[in-house]
Length: 120
Image 1: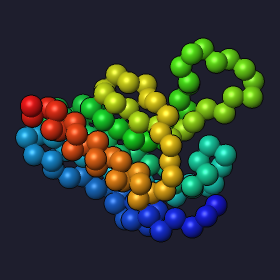
Image 2 (image 1 turned 90 degrees about the vertical axis):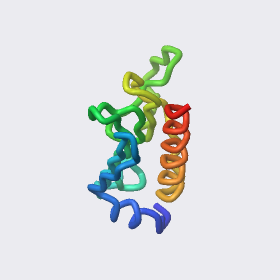
Image 3 (image 1 turned 30 degrees about the horizontal axis):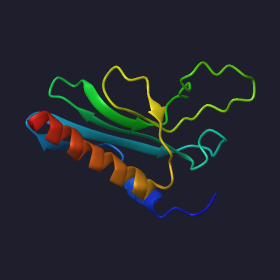
Image 4 (image 1 turned 180 degrees about the vertical axis):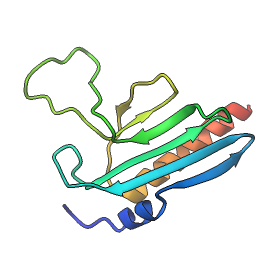
């Protein structure tokens, strides 16, 4: 595993809850786990945007594998763990984790986009 300086930034944000205005808020959880094939960066994370009632409306995480669409059913399939949820009912789509700084940038960019859409 190559060194990722952004991992320390992500870990420092663990437990952060930040008001986004108009009742919306974000929560960031991140902690070290053993490096595995499913989690090669050794960090379990959950970055989420919520409505005032607590319902998640956006999320980036690696808490479970995401089954690819299209009915793939063969033995050698490696299911991705890094994924994002585009709305509260979304089961998740693959997210290409490159490094922790990019994860944070992608998350906050999408938070801004979602909140702008809601305000329109």
